[in-house]
Length: 103
Image (tube, rainbow, N blue to C red; front, side, top):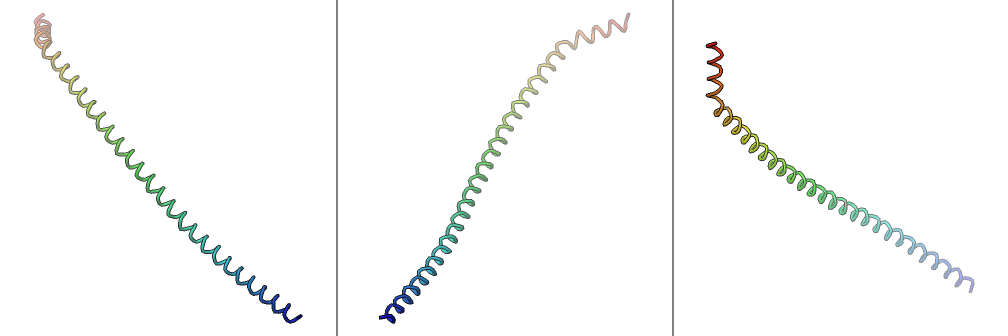
């Protein structure tokens, strides 16, 4: 009877050790998988952030190009107005200059 009890205790200890080893292996496997999952999630978020930044940069460039085109158009219009005013006043300026020289 004592032998049976000792054998049962040994068997229980052995089974407990096996369960402990299996639990440790399972925990290590889950930890490794969690690290892989976290790395994949980080990579996915980094790629999404890169894409958002690239899109924002492209939009900023497009907006800047539009502003530059507006500034060019405005400068061209101003130059045309100045040229028209100069052409309109050219005769008077030449006449006034000639009168001032002749005096």
